[in-house]
Length: 390
Image 1: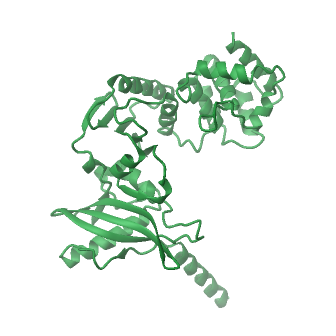
Image 2 (image 1 turned 30 degrees about the vertical axis):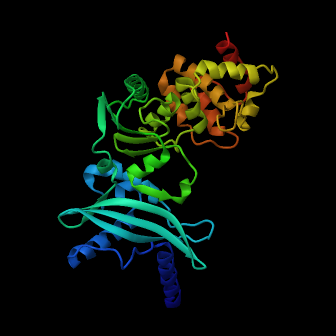
Image 3 (image 1 turned 180 degrees about the vertical axis):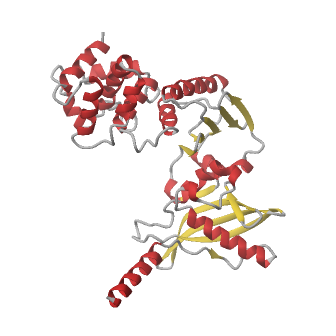
Protein backbone atom coordinates (compact mmCIF):
# COMPACT_ATOMS: atom_id res chain seq x y z
CA UNK A 1 0.00 0.00 0.00
CA UNK A 2 2.87 2.35 0.97
CA UNK A 3 4.72 1.60 -2.28
CA UNK A 4 1.58 2.35 -4.33
CA UNK A 5 1.23 5.68 -2.52
CA UNK A 6 4.86 6.58 -3.27
CA UNK A 7 4.38 5.70 -6.94
CA UNK A 8 1.29 7.92 -7.08
CA UNK A 9 3.16 10.86 -5.49
CA UNK A 10 6.08 10.38 -7.88
CA UNK A 11 3.73 10.39 -10.90
CA UNK A 12 2.03 13.56 -9.68
CA UNK A 13 5.38 15.30 -9.20
CA UNK A 14 6.54 14.28 -12.67
CA UNK A 15 3.26 15.58 -14.12
CA UNK A 16 3.66 18.93 -12.33
CA UNK A 17 7.26 19.29 -13.51
CA UNK A 18 6.33 18.36 -17.09
CA UNK A 19 3.45 20.85 -17.27
CA UNK A 20 5.15 23.68 -15.37
CA UNK A 21 5.99 26.87 -17.21
CA UNK A 22 9.67 27.51 -17.81
CA UNK A 23 11.43 29.88 -15.42
CA UNK A 24 12.25 33.29 -16.85
CA UNK A 25 15.89 33.47 -17.96
CA UNK A 26 17.54 36.80 -17.20
CA UNK A 27 20.55 37.77 -19.29
CA UNK A 28 23.49 39.09 -17.27
CA UNK A 29 23.56 42.10 -19.61
CA UNK A 30 20.06 43.25 -18.59
CA UNK A 31 20.22 46.37 -16.43
CA UNK A 32 17.75 45.69 -13.65
CA UNK A 33 16.60 48.34 -11.12
CA UNK A 34 19.51 49.29 -8.83
CA UNK A 35 17.49 48.47 -5.73
CA UNK A 36 17.97 44.70 -5.33
CA UNK A 37 14.65 44.30 -3.49
CA UNK A 38 12.78 45.96 -6.37
CA UNK A 39 14.71 43.85 -8.90
CA UNK A 40 13.87 40.57 -7.17
CA UNK A 41 10.22 41.51 -6.89
CA UNK A 42 10.05 42.55 -10.55
CA UNK A 43 11.51 39.21 -11.71
CA UNK A 44 9.30 37.22 -9.33
CA UNK A 45 6.11 39.02 -10.34
CA UNK A 46 6.99 38.83 -14.04
CA UNK A 47 7.44 35.07 -13.65
CA UNK A 48 4.03 34.81 -11.98
CA UNK A 49 2.48 36.94 -14.70
CA UNK A 50 3.90 34.66 -17.43
CA UNK A 51 2.60 31.57 -15.65
CA UNK A 52 -0.85 33.17 -15.35
CA UNK A 53 -0.99 33.96 -19.09
CA UNK A 54 -1.65 30.24 -19.65
CA UNK A 55 -4.79 30.40 -17.51
CA UNK A 56 -8.11 32.11 -18.32
CA UNK A 57 -7.46 35.85 -18.63
CA UNK A 58 -9.83 36.69 -15.78
CA UNK A 59 -7.71 34.59 -13.39
CA UNK A 60 -4.56 36.63 -13.95
CA UNK A 61 -3.93 38.69 -10.78
CA UNK A 62 -0.90 40.45 -12.24
CA UNK A 63 -2.76 42.59 -14.79
CA UNK A 64 -3.11 46.33 -14.19
CA UNK A 65 -6.87 46.54 -13.40
CA UNK A 66 -7.59 49.78 -15.27
CA UNK A 67 -6.10 48.32 -18.49
CA UNK A 68 -7.54 44.83 -18.31
CA UNK A 69 -9.05 44.51 -21.76
CA UNK A 70 -6.05 46.14 -23.45
CA UNK A 71 -3.84 43.56 -21.74
CA UNK A 72 -6.18 40.65 -22.51
CA UNK A 73 -5.61 41.24 -26.23
CA UNK A 74 -1.84 40.94 -25.68
CA UNK A 75 -1.76 37.94 -23.34
CA UNK A 76 -3.91 35.97 -25.77
CA UNK A 77 -0.68 35.93 -27.81
CA UNK A 78 1.10 34.14 -24.92
CA UNK A 79 -1.23 31.12 -24.90
CA UNK A 80 0.76 27.94 -25.54
CA UNK A 81 3.77 30.01 -26.53
CA UNK A 82 6.39 27.55 -25.25
CA UNK A 83 5.03 24.64 -27.26
CA UNK A 84 6.74 23.49 -30.47
CA UNK A 85 4.94 20.97 -32.64
CA UNK A 86 7.94 20.69 -34.93
CA UNK A 87 10.30 19.73 -32.10
CA UNK A 88 7.53 17.87 -30.23
CA UNK A 89 8.34 19.70 -27.01
CA UNK A 90 5.73 21.56 -24.94
CA UNK A 91 8.43 23.74 -23.39
CA UNK A 92 10.84 24.19 -26.28
CA UNK A 93 10.65 28.00 -26.34
CA UNK A 94 12.02 29.48 -23.12
CA UNK A 95 11.22 33.03 -21.93
CA UNK A 96 14.21 35.41 -21.87
CA UNK A 97 14.20 38.85 -20.30
CA UNK A 98 16.10 41.02 -22.80
CA UNK A 99 15.63 44.59 -21.59
CA UNK A 100 14.26 46.71 -18.72
CA UNK A 101 13.83 50.44 -19.37
CA UNK A 102 12.84 52.83 -16.59
CA UNK A 103 9.94 55.07 -17.65
CA UNK A 104 9.44 56.86 -14.32
CA UNK A 105 9.90 56.17 -10.61
CA UNK A 106 7.44 53.26 -10.57
CA UNK A 107 7.06 52.21 -14.21
CA UNK A 108 9.27 50.08 -16.47
CA UNK A 109 9.13 48.96 -20.09
CA UNK A 110 9.85 45.24 -20.25
CA UNK A 111 11.11 43.43 -23.35
CA UNK A 112 11.19 39.65 -23.46
CA UNK A 113 11.60 36.92 -26.06
CA UNK A 114 10.83 33.23 -26.40
CA UNK A 115 13.76 31.29 -27.84
CA UNK A 116 14.31 27.58 -28.36
CA UNK A 117 17.67 25.91 -29.02
CA UNK A 118 18.28 22.67 -30.92
CA UNK A 119 21.71 21.40 -31.96
CA UNK A 120 23.18 24.75 -30.89
CA UNK A 121 20.86 26.59 -33.32
CA UNK A 122 18.59 29.24 -31.71
CA UNK A 123 14.99 29.59 -32.91
CA UNK A 124 13.21 32.87 -32.13
CA UNK A 125 9.45 32.67 -31.69
CA UNK A 126 8.48 35.99 -30.07
CA UNK A 127 9.55 39.45 -29.04
CA UNK A 128 7.10 41.06 -26.60
CA UNK A 129 6.85 44.42 -24.84
CA UNK A 130 5.06 44.95 -21.52
CA UNK A 131 4.72 47.81 -19.09
CA UNK A 132 5.41 46.96 -15.44
CA UNK A 133 3.77 49.27 -12.90
CA UNK A 134 4.78 49.12 -9.21
CA UNK A 135 1.72 48.95 -6.96
CA UNK A 136 1.55 48.75 -3.17
CA UNK A 137 2.67 45.14 -2.79
CA UNK A 138 3.65 43.90 -6.27
CA UNK A 139 4.24 44.74 -9.90
CA UNK A 140 1.28 44.77 -12.25
CA UNK A 141 1.61 44.42 -16.02
CA UNK A 142 -0.16 45.89 -19.02
CA UNK A 143 -0.02 46.09 -22.78
CA UNK A 144 1.67 49.21 -24.21
CA UNK A 145 -1.41 49.83 -26.40
CA UNK A 146 -2.63 52.89 -24.48
CA UNK A 147 0.90 54.28 -24.19
CA UNK A 148 1.48 53.75 -27.93
CA UNK A 149 -1.71 55.57 -28.92
CA UNK A 150 -1.84 58.40 -26.36
CA UNK A 151 -1.44 61.00 -29.13
CA UNK A 152 -4.14 59.47 -31.33
CA UNK A 153 -7.50 61.09 -31.95
CA UNK A 154 -10.74 59.64 -30.63
CA UNK A 155 -14.37 59.80 -31.67
CA UNK A 156 -17.23 58.57 -29.47
CA UNK A 157 -20.46 57.58 -31.21
CA UNK A 158 -23.08 56.19 -28.82
CA UNK A 159 -21.54 53.08 -27.26
CA UNK A 160 -18.45 52.96 -29.52
CA UNK A 161 -15.11 54.75 -29.24
CA UNK A 162 -12.93 54.94 -32.36
CA UNK A 163 -9.17 55.49 -32.03
CA UNK A 164 -7.32 56.71 -35.14
CA UNK A 165 -4.19 58.64 -36.15
CA UNK A 166 -5.47 61.41 -38.43
CA UNK A 167 -8.77 60.87 -40.28
CA UNK A 168 -11.89 58.81 -39.58
CA UNK A 169 -14.56 57.89 -42.13
CA UNK A 170 -17.50 59.20 -40.11
CA UNK A 171 -20.14 57.85 -42.48
CA UNK A 172 -18.82 54.30 -42.09
CA UNK A 173 -18.36 54.76 -38.36
CA UNK A 174 -21.98 55.82 -37.91
CA UNK A 175 -23.23 52.96 -40.10
CA UNK A 176 -21.17 50.56 -37.97
CA UNK A 177 -22.62 51.92 -34.73
CA UNK A 178 -26.21 51.85 -36.00
CA UNK A 179 -25.86 48.30 -37.28
CA UNK A 180 -24.25 47.26 -33.99
CA UNK A 181 -27.25 48.68 -32.17
CA UNK A 182 -29.65 46.71 -34.40
CA UNK A 183 -27.75 43.47 -33.81
CA UNK A 184 -27.55 44.09 -30.06
CA UNK A 185 -31.29 44.65 -29.96
CA UNK A 186 -31.87 41.27 -31.64
CA UNK A 187 -29.50 39.64 -29.17
CA UNK A 188 -31.04 41.43 -26.18
CA UNK A 189 -27.57 42.75 -25.46
CA UNK A 190 -27.86 46.52 -25.39
CA UNK A 191 -25.40 48.73 -23.45
CA UNK A 192 -22.36 46.77 -24.64
CA UNK A 193 -19.41 49.07 -25.23
CA UNK A 194 -16.78 48.72 -27.96
CA UNK A 195 -13.35 50.27 -28.43
CA UNK A 196 -12.00 50.17 -31.99
CA UNK A 197 -8.39 50.93 -32.93
CA UNK A 198 -7.88 51.61 -36.64
CA UNK A 199 -4.63 50.50 -38.31
CA UNK A 200 -3.56 49.50 -41.82
CA UNK A 201 -1.66 46.24 -41.32
CA UNK A 202 -1.14 43.26 -39.05
CA UNK A 203 2.40 44.48 -38.33
CA UNK A 204 1.12 47.85 -37.10
CA UNK A 205 -1.60 46.11 -35.06
CA UNK A 206 0.91 43.78 -33.41
CA UNK A 207 3.39 46.52 -32.54
CA UNK A 208 0.65 48.63 -30.94
CA UNK A 209 -0.45 45.84 -28.60
CA UNK A 210 3.14 44.85 -27.68
CA UNK A 211 4.14 42.14 -30.17
CA UNK A 212 7.29 43.20 -32.02
CA UNK A 213 7.66 39.75 -33.60
CA UNK A 214 5.86 36.43 -33.61
CA UNK A 215 6.99 33.52 -35.77
CA UNK A 216 3.39 32.37 -36.24
CA UNK A 217 2.54 35.49 -38.27
CA UNK A 218 5.43 35.40 -40.74
CA UNK A 219 4.23 36.59 -44.16
CA UNK A 220 0.76 37.60 -42.94
CA UNK A 221 -0.09 41.17 -43.83
CA UNK A 222 -3.66 41.54 -42.59
CA UNK A 223 -5.65 40.68 -39.49
CA UNK A 224 -8.21 41.73 -36.88
CA UNK A 225 -7.70 40.99 -33.18
CA UNK A 226 -10.32 41.30 -30.44
CA UNK A 227 -10.77 40.76 -26.72
CA UNK A 228 -13.72 40.65 -24.33
CA UNK A 229 -14.14 41.70 -20.72
CA UNK A 230 -17.69 41.43 -19.38
CA UNK A 231 -19.75 44.06 -21.26
CA UNK A 232 -16.76 45.51 -23.06
CA UNK A 233 -15.16 44.59 -26.36
CA UNK A 234 -11.84 45.76 -27.80
CA UNK A 235 -11.11 45.44 -31.52
CA UNK A 236 -7.82 46.28 -33.20
CA UNK A 237 -8.15 46.46 -36.97
CA UNK A 238 -5.11 45.58 -39.04
CA UNK A 239 -6.78 45.19 -42.41
CA UNK A 240 -6.14 48.36 -44.41
CA UNK A 241 -8.45 50.25 -42.09
CA UNK A 242 -6.45 53.17 -40.73
CA UNK A 243 -9.34 55.53 -41.58
CA UNK A 244 -12.13 52.96 -41.11
CA UNK A 245 -12.89 52.95 -44.82
CA UNK A 246 -13.76 49.25 -44.74
CA UNK A 247 -16.05 47.40 -42.40
CA UNK A 248 -17.83 44.14 -43.03
CA UNK A 249 -21.40 43.79 -41.68
CA UNK A 250 -20.90 40.00 -41.84
CA UNK A 251 -18.00 40.18 -39.37
CA UNK A 252 -19.89 42.73 -37.29
CA UNK A 253 -22.64 40.16 -36.68
CA UNK A 254 -20.04 37.69 -35.40
CA UNK A 255 -18.47 40.36 -33.17
CA UNK A 256 -21.78 41.33 -31.54
CA UNK A 257 -22.79 37.69 -31.06
CA UNK A 258 -19.47 37.02 -29.31
CA UNK A 259 -20.39 39.66 -26.71
CA UNK A 260 -23.33 37.49 -25.69
CA UNK A 261 -22.01 33.95 -26.10
CA UNK A 262 -18.81 32.36 -27.30
CA UNK A 263 -19.08 31.48 -30.98
CA UNK A 264 -17.56 28.11 -30.07
CA UNK A 265 -20.78 27.27 -28.26
CA UNK A 266 -23.20 28.06 -31.09
CA UNK A 267 -23.97 26.06 -34.19
CA UNK A 268 -21.53 27.43 -36.77
CA UNK A 269 -23.67 26.91 -39.94
CA UNK A 270 -26.60 28.72 -38.24
CA UNK A 271 -24.28 31.52 -37.09
CA UNK A 272 -22.97 31.88 -40.65
CA UNK A 273 -26.52 31.80 -42.01
CA UNK A 274 -27.35 34.78 -39.78
CA UNK A 275 -24.23 36.61 -40.98
CA UNK A 276 -25.19 35.98 -44.65
CA UNK A 277 -28.75 37.19 -44.14
CA UNK A 278 -27.98 40.22 -41.97
CA UNK A 279 -24.63 41.27 -43.42
CA UNK A 280 -23.89 39.48 -46.68
CA UNK A 281 -20.34 38.24 -47.23
CA UNK A 282 -17.11 39.40 -48.92
CA UNK A 283 -18.70 42.76 -49.71
CA UNK A 284 -21.73 41.14 -51.38
CA UNK A 285 -25.25 41.73 -50.13
CA UNK A 286 -27.61 38.90 -49.23
CA UNK A 287 -29.53 39.50 -52.47
CA UNK A 288 -26.35 39.18 -54.56
CA UNK A 289 -25.36 35.98 -52.74
CA UNK A 290 -28.79 34.46 -53.28
CA UNK A 291 -28.79 35.40 -56.97
CA UNK A 292 -25.43 33.64 -57.42
CA UNK A 293 -26.79 30.68 -55.45
CA UNK A 294 -29.74 30.41 -57.85
CA UNK A 295 -27.45 30.56 -60.88
CA UNK A 296 -24.89 28.02 -59.69
CA UNK A 297 -26.71 25.63 -57.35
CA UNK A 298 -30.50 25.95 -57.34
CA UNK A 299 -30.68 25.80 -61.15
CA UNK A 300 -30.42 22.04 -60.67
CA UNK A 301 -34.01 20.93 -60.08
CA UNK A 302 -32.77 17.63 -58.66
CA UNK A 303 -30.63 19.25 -55.97
CA UNK A 304 -30.83 17.37 -52.67
CA UNK A 305 -30.51 19.82 -49.78
CA UNK A 306 -29.89 17.06 -47.23
CA UNK A 307 -26.76 16.22 -49.24
CA UNK A 308 -25.51 19.79 -48.95
CA UNK A 309 -26.25 19.69 -45.22
CA UNK A 310 -23.72 16.90 -44.81
CA UNK A 311 -21.24 17.91 -47.53
CA UNK A 312 -19.65 21.35 -47.47
CA UNK A 313 -19.95 22.85 -50.94
CA UNK A 314 -18.42 26.14 -52.04
CA UNK A 315 -20.03 28.07 -54.91
CA UNK A 316 -17.92 31.20 -54.45
CA UNK A 317 -15.42 32.50 -56.98
CA UNK A 318 -12.48 31.11 -54.99
CA UNK A 319 -11.59 29.15 -51.89
CA UNK A 320 -10.50 32.31 -50.09
CA UNK A 321 -13.80 34.13 -50.83
CA UNK A 322 -16.00 31.10 -50.35
CA UNK A 323 -19.79 30.94 -50.32
CA UNK A 324 -21.24 27.84 -48.75
CA UNK A 325 -24.52 26.22 -49.82
CA UNK A 326 -25.51 25.18 -46.31
CA UNK A 327 -25.08 28.73 -45.01
CA UNK A 328 -27.48 30.05 -47.66
CA UNK A 329 -30.06 27.42 -46.73
CA UNK A 330 -29.69 28.33 -43.08
CA UNK A 331 -30.23 31.99 -43.98
CA UNK A 332 -33.54 31.07 -45.65
CA UNK A 333 -34.59 29.03 -42.62
CA UNK A 334 -33.61 31.85 -40.26
CA UNK A 335 -35.65 34.30 -42.31
CA UNK A 336 -38.71 32.05 -42.04
CA UNK A 337 -38.27 31.51 -38.28
CA UNK A 338 -37.79 35.21 -37.56
CA UNK A 339 -40.81 36.17 -39.67
CA UNK A 340 -43.13 33.64 -38.07
CA UNK A 341 -41.82 33.39 -34.49
CA UNK A 342 -39.30 36.14 -33.88
CA UNK A 343 -35.62 36.11 -33.04
CA UNK A 344 -36.21 33.89 -30.00
CA UNK A 345 -36.67 31.01 -32.43
CA UNK A 346 -33.42 31.88 -34.22
CA UNK A 347 -31.65 32.00 -30.85
CA UNK A 348 -32.95 28.52 -30.07
CA UNK A 349 -31.54 27.20 -33.36
CA UNK A 350 -28.20 28.96 -32.79
CA UNK A 351 -27.95 27.07 -29.52
CA UNK A 352 -28.94 23.63 -30.83
CA UNK A 353 -25.37 22.36 -30.29
CA UNK A 354 -22.12 22.43 -32.19
CA UNK A 355 -22.03 21.08 -35.74
CA UNK A 356 -21.98 17.29 -35.76
CA UNK A 357 -22.03 14.62 -38.43
CA UNK A 358 -25.64 13.65 -39.10
CA UNK A 359 -26.93 16.93 -37.60
CA UNK A 360 -29.41 15.17 -35.30
CA UNK A 361 -29.50 18.00 -32.75
CA UNK A 362 -29.99 20.51 -35.54
CA UNK A 363 -32.90 18.61 -37.11
CA UNK A 364 -34.56 17.90 -33.76
CA UNK A 365 -34.39 21.57 -32.74
CA UNK A 366 -35.58 22.76 -36.15
CA UNK A 367 -38.56 20.40 -35.94
CA UNK A 368 -39.47 21.74 -32.48
CA UNK A 369 -39.27 25.35 -33.67
CA UNK A 370 -40.96 25.27 -37.05
CA UNK A 371 -41.89 21.69 -37.96
CA UNK A 372 -39.06 21.03 -40.44
CA UNK A 373 -37.57 17.59 -39.80
CA UNK A 374 -34.88 15.53 -41.43
CA UNK A 375 -37.60 13.62 -43.24
CA UNK A 376 -39.23 16.66 -44.88
CA UNK A 377 -36.13 18.88 -44.98
CA UNK A 378 -35.51 18.67 -48.73
CA UNK A 379 -39.12 19.40 -49.61
CA UNK A 380 -39.44 22.34 -47.19
CA UNK A 381 -36.15 23.90 -48.27
CA UNK A 382 -37.25 23.81 -51.90
CA UNK A 383 -40.34 25.80 -50.84
CA UNK A 384 -38.13 28.42 -49.21
CA UNK A 385 -35.82 28.64 -52.24
CA UNK A 386 -38.75 29.14 -54.62
CA UNK A 387 -40.40 31.71 -52.34
CA UNK A 388 -37.18 33.76 -52.03
CA UNK A 389 -36.69 33.62 -55.81
CA UNK A 390 -40.08 35.19 -56.61
